[in-house]
Amino acid sequence: MNEKEKRDRGLLYDGNYDQSLLTERINCKSLCYKYNNLPPENTAARQELLKKILGKTKENFLIEQPFYCDYGYNIEIGENFYANHNLIILDPAKVIIGDNVFIGPNCAIYTPQHPIDTETRNKGLEYAFPVKIGNNVWLGGNVVILPDVTIGDNTVIGAGSVVNKNIPPNVIAAGNPCRVIRKITEQDKLKFEK
Image 1 (cartoon, rainbow, N blue to C red):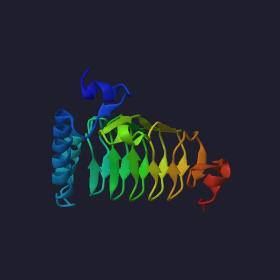
Image 2 (image 1 turned 120 degrees about the vertical axis):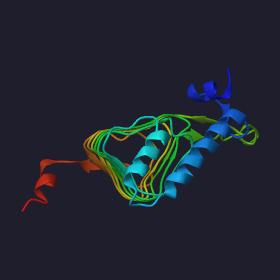
Image 3 (image 1 turned 90 degrees about the vertical axis):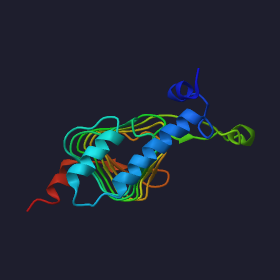
Image 4 (image 1 turned 30 degrees about the horizontal axis):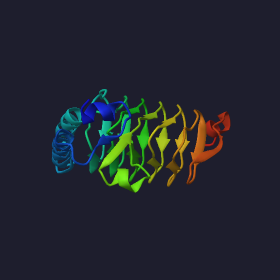
């Protein structure tokens, strides 16, 4: 079994020194570099390049520059996706994001983990677990999502949160570590009606 196959099965793999994985990351980072240096008004070229970087997109999406990822092909975004400046997705494992997701500035989604044992970690070994974000989710600025986390539909994650465990649908959650604050109710709709 090669290192990529180990990675894709959630096993320890050589993420630092395996030449094929290094080459894939360099290719992706080269595309991200091109994307980040396109003129902001050149929206068609930006969207075309993102379709080359990402594994799966729908038609209506925007990721503000700069944007960084490791492989790109493990990232799937839904319809009406928006990410503000400085989104970082480390994607050795799948990152699946639903429709109508809005991500604030300076957010990060991490799928890799490193062993606690120093001897194993110093060999360059790591493992990766997926992240799933449901439909109609809003991540406030500076949110960090750690590996093996699912965020349910219609949920809001407060700014500055570190999400290290699953968050259910239809709630507001915040903090470090992130925890459910309360359910979203009909009263939340009325707050902004005039």
